[in-house]
Image (cartoon, rainbow, N blue to C red; front, side, top):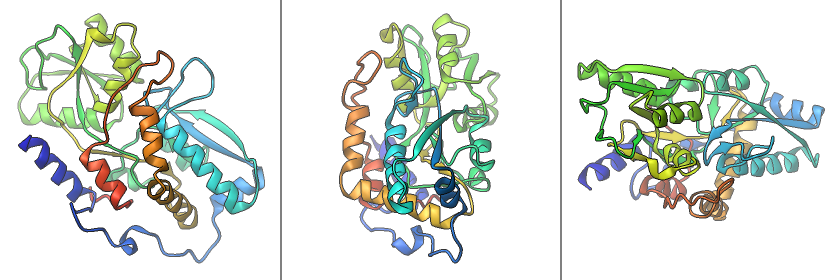
Length: 309
């Protein structure tokens, strides 16, 4: 419990929050822009908006038996679309979906192929050089998924020889760094999607899969035999997950940030959270039973897009 409490405090500091004092909104909001929003102008002109999505980031953004993605982040983005429609007074907009993976998601936003990325992307300083982020919709950390009969309980366990993770993700970077710091001879395997990584663990082709723990629980719940897998280990990272949007468009960002705050203060965000983390989700009707963490509840008290790492 002491370890978890310290992790929570460190996370709040990294997010620019305190346990009892609000962050002044002036620090979290972008000043009113002096020029029009190119993103809003394009959406209004085309009459459509493109949402980038992940096909296996359960329960944030995934395919569940149809071509249209579902998930917590998808529902949030659809609420953002409604706010955009109200702003530009054009309704309904045509909503198109663009599949992306961990390697292509930022480029899709940078090149204007999508206006919002609705998945499980961590907001950090390196990525903020290329894209912007709104207020986090989830706070998580990287752990390990292993077979239920595995003795592995952390990255430094002697039987952890082959570690798989999804390419260009923060859990993969953290696992590499920890292995180097501890002098481990771990073999790292990079794959393009989460389902492939889980399958490798199930088949014994990898000893563990490093990823955000909420994703691991979601992926596990939707496998044919969830009892054959378990999530283990301490948190290796702190991951504020947030919707990505184009960099350098302050009017568009302010609109998105304001709607995120409205969803939080109106309790709509809590209802969406309960829908995807505490109730049956498609396609198998699995229930993750994940209560909102202390860290996420602090974000709901004092919504801010400010992340200091």
